[in-house]
Image (cartoon, rainbow, N blue to C red; front, side, top):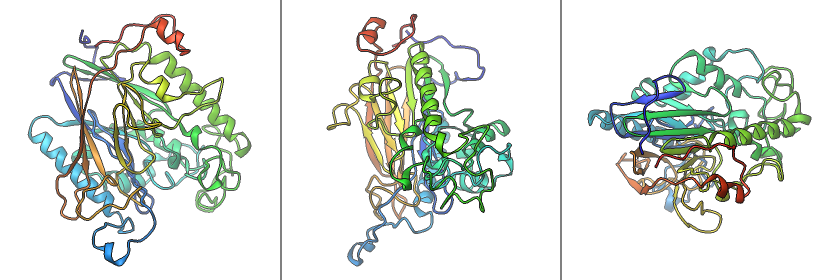
Length: 419
């Protein structure tokens, strides 16, 4: 049965004029201080780029677009997105919002020290790296629904101005990142979608100091110098850790809150579609063993999650069904939309555009199906190139007794999922 329509009040977005919606999801890494990750009020994904640093040899040079061509990848993606947004608008099926998958300001986040008072309206990065890179319909008409990535915290530290991205939500009506984890409901004419946005940055709080946001040598240190981002050393109070020694426990507590919230909110959802948005891909397990650990391959389908949207790795990938070891999320479709263009990507983008390095995804959702279309950056000639088309069907959530038997935590009362 289709969902009945709630009142059009936050956190519900009501779109009753159309039975379906098309949107944009993208995240991008820009050449200098960067661009961002995201996805739209319907959906269409994109995400930052991490290209291999090796320069192509002379024979291959003419076949590739190199990431050091100062934002060329990002601009190609932006141009293709804008052209598609205009096309959809002209057809009276406009994109409504963008779902942002993190690393919004690559590679080092907002240039401020965390824990400072709200100064987000004075940051030039929102104008230069967001609105200027994604102009007109992309930021003037569509909301951007966001999560934080490890590079929003600083990449090699946690002391950059990630909290300013949250503050900025409350100064205008297009950038939406109201908290580190949050939920938004979209009510269409004859169906409803619940979006769950999470912060999984616990994943990058251990290991190599050059990719560890809790690194003791970078909080503060190289790339996170107090001379550039003045503040109280590694102390991010009141919004973040008091110092590197408590960084791991702070992120563990943050993820525990995410974990508890997911296990409370997802089983209570009576929407026709449940979509989970995280910076980290679904084959990245997360959490503390015995307390908050989730193996997504064992969690998503039983919980009735229809689509998992992610970024982090800088490429464009669509997974649905058994696509190899570690990549099988069973009935749940999942995407990596990390190819918004920027400093690097997992593969060198080609001049003809036939690659999955940079690009965006468009998702059209209706009561009975969700269609994913992955577009490439289009190459030097900015062609319209479709790399993948996948149709997803709703995933029924297992019953209370089945979830309990599987060892998953659920509330005592659980409404059925509308399908």
